[in-house]
Length: 281
Image (cartoon, rainbow, N blue to C red; front, side, top):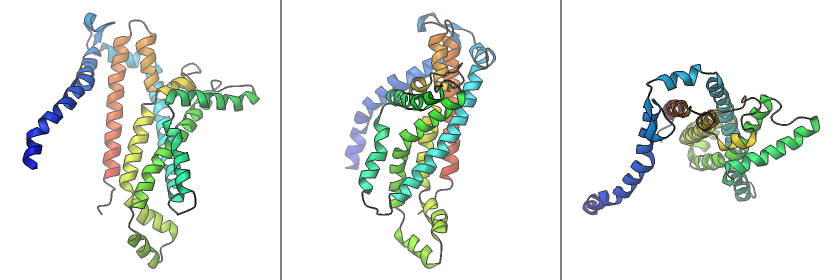
């Protein structure tokens, strides 16, 4: 069996490798190269060095503002999504009636596309705010909390499923031993359950961190960066730079490379920190 796998493994690996090279690796490397050029198409690229990276930060403060807005949004979303989804998972692992129905209902928002979800919540939030004579683009704070609510509504059910799987794998022997030793439910939660579900926490934090930082379609549909680009997140800022300003394709490409580096570093640090706290069963 091992000889057969070793013999035919390259044959099965070849299509995936080719697809990865042509769909990801080659376009990514070309994008990095284009970030050092002034171009409108790939064929007319002219080398400008690090000028695009300098312009990304010095030409205006829109990129830095989008970075700060995205960072704040990500911090709030990661905390709220994981806290609420973990609480729901605790409730749905208590053996209450209708648990499977509740899990399905909470998971369903994750199946709705981002653009559609953004427009739905735009209508809902504006319906509430219209009674006060304003809409979601009246203040940046309205757009910020609208994005937080949308993200929570979409991701909580998905993260809840992962937490439920982690909680169901906690050995009952450990919980019973803690109860025999006189541990309160709160003590059992923080000393037994949470350490045992750290792998689930690592996965959920990674998913919420990357999804929040890369959010584009929901941002476009809900606020489109209004008012005055104050609710513009990084992905939307890069899109507007690349397609909305003539001759700024190189700067938009440089912003995309910076964006990739930031997300990569943050995801790596988060995985490193949370993985180090996982309990070896």
